[in-house]
Image (cartoon, rainbow, N blue to C red; front, side, top):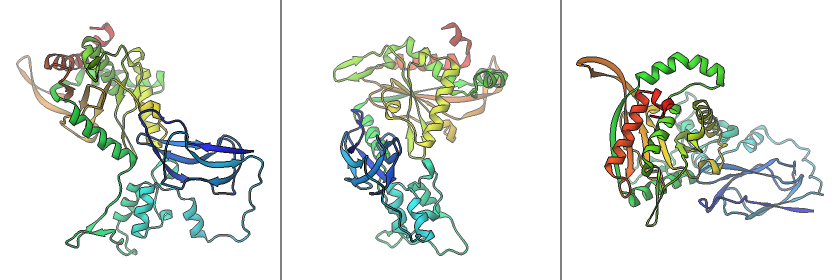
Length: 389
């Protein structure tokens, strides 16, 4: 029986995707649920598994092809027998190169630079070679190796490299430009004394990890503080749909995390119903699976408010861009000891700058400022989160 291999149904927000690299060749046997090819969308990399065991008898699309939902890309014969492997062993170099999986941009850059992908250490999921891995390989000086070939030259003869944007990067660029063009973005700033939360964390972090199996970080406190602020000022949790304002009766908080493919924003659904431990577990899971490229499209879709922590990279201040169709975003920054006046005395306190960008079309300055102050107050006095104050 011939079984069709189709692209899975993509979400409405994802119109097309790219076939990354076939794991099997025509004539090879495949097992049920074995991954046939990776599918790259503008959000995540998905696997397309074999629905039934058999032999791959036809490939209708090649590596790098752009495909849509439910498109036919291959066929499997469930009654066929796999072709016998050739008796002659392939050269070692060729075998190594055949087993190396690289992203399309990485393959092109490696080919242009004359680099064997087998010589490049892959940092992507399952050892996949990313464009950045090839760039890092090219930039490493070696005593015995000759300088890497110049990929291209500018008009005045200096070296340049030209590589296509990944689908994720292109989508990020599109959405950020859309946000700036359609939202009336304004940013309000404040600063928060992190000492109360830091003291609380230092006191209970060991017991917390032993009890819940996850480390106690700071992001969980901020998620809780944001939810408390959004409950007080619902307009900050709302969104614009044409001429309507949509007030959301739920709190789906996006948390920006880094991945080998770029910045992604998985969503903590119904964050108001989760304990601090549940939030920390969710964030830790998101971070791990983002590095492995295993976040699902549904986990990156939606959201009513976003938190971005540039402080992990050392940022002192920024003006975050709203993630459409949301209407506000919180930017966290690096915590630094600063001289502060407390009760007439100068003391050193661990301070963090907070920045909240908001869509001034529906959120007035009053609500934006008060919401940010509510977040600040909750972090400076964590007991408010327990007492719902």
